[in-house]
Image (tube, rainbow, N blue to C red; front, side, top):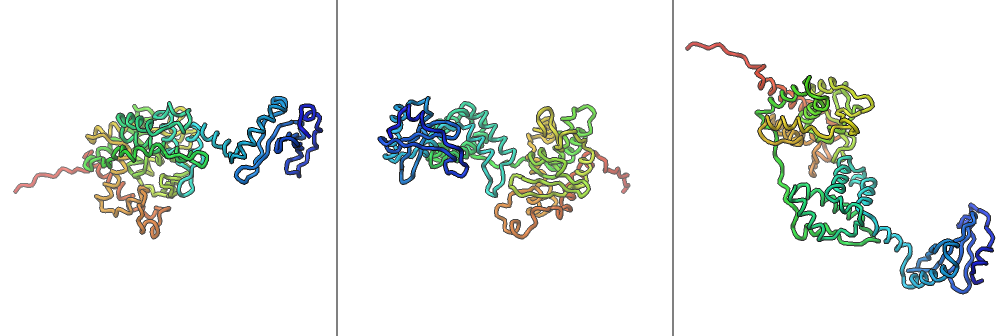
Length: 418
């Protein structure tokens, strides 16, 4: 029959059937326009549909609800949809493409942080997610809520040069993140060339010079004494005392800032003398030895009720974000600007001075092996408690340097007459 308003409204409501492919829906097809019909559900809803084939696949498209659309309006839409199907335009793919083209940079970043997996199948680290969020909100803030497909090569080049004037390293990091986000958004519905590629074609990436800063070894003892004074101070605020403790922790372990800041008490075993990282930067879960001076510091650390972080932050921040005031004092003492990552290099420099093999130092600092066959296949890399003697050796040297710097182990010799 030819569908009309009165006939559509007169069709009976079908009973619900769970076993039916269409869950009890009834479909009535128009005899004049092949593929045009009305679908009635057990709830009484009546919707106009059109069905045809595109590229060998059967597609059914909902045109609209009866009442919102008149029968004549639905028929006109059905004709247009059938012509598109005959031309090979797949409505399912078109719907996906339309949705994909409307995705904003912020939406892609949110999806990326939630679902992107590492090469080993793990989730992104909290620090990676924070870096992505920070750059999307700051360096790309005016792009964040606009379609990601609107980001062009010219825009990338201009913004990269703008950020580079402030910080070349931050410009590189921001656009590596942007490149990853755009790659994540590219699919069969949105095939495109990543506009960030223009930085490679034009050779615009900033050269990252390897950082080599560390505390001069002849000042390590003074730095140790400084940290001891700060962490036991009765004048400094608790947050500053925590800053001194975490700095001491990094100095004695050579770990990354994030690994120390995000350490929770359940990953510390004072009795066994070890601490654990479940998901570090290189995604290699590992247990480290705790040297004696560090164990003593942790035993003295206060616990915060309701906060399981070893180095808690303040306010809404659960863990410590930075220890700038402490590092400013260490930098002043050393005579050069230092970051917490420089303490990691200091740890390695001390180990080398003590002639500890480099591969052992790499393990203790959870450094990426770089394809070292011995480390990858013949060495225990998850439980490093067998390296406790090396960790104790480095810690003992630092403590001894502190005594030398304070003059505690200096003995006056009586003059000898010749």
